[in-house]
Length: 151
View 1: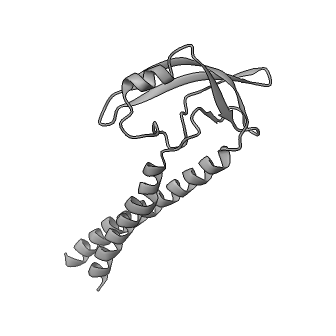
View 2: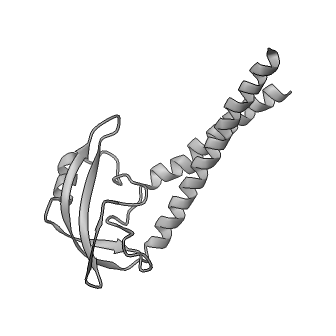
């Protein structure tokens, strides 16, 4: 019975290590992609809709269209972190900045024009929090308890 308990502990705490590693890798990927995409070309576009998603976290869902070489594309990605940059942005600010019908500049990938985003700013604080705090803490937590189980 003790062996079963140890196996469960190994699986649980091993999962913490894997989750921490996955969070760190995802954050690194997002940082690299955001950095690379600052050089993407821009084109004109228009905000089609703005609605608010309510839940544990409230955030705007913005739909826009844009044109590349005469072809219309549609997107919803605001930036690469998926968060409105800046702490404490009010709904009033977002509603004004992304009001329906507003003409906007859209950054798009030249090789895949259907991949685009609106705001070149990335929520660096969120990504760095994942990369430098959350990921390593999960790895450390899992490794410490794995070490104690395996001793």
